[in-house]
Length: 95
Image (cartoon, rainbow, N blue to C red; front, side, top):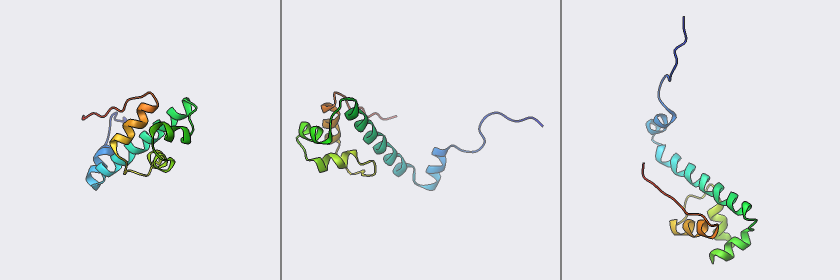
């Protein structure tokens, strides 16, 4: 008996779609990655949360919400501003 190469069954993405949780799961994953990337950029620039909030003209609590990987309710313009303060651009694309 020889082993077959390749996939058997559906992908994880297909599974999430079948379960009806694909969109929600994707949104959570995107927010977590974005929060991580912002935190990493702050670390690379040796920027504290207080310094970052001041540069963004926002409160420390607002910045904490942006950096909270579980908080999905942030405005796009706020994330764009955070990226700009760190010398980055936010890129969103439809695939």
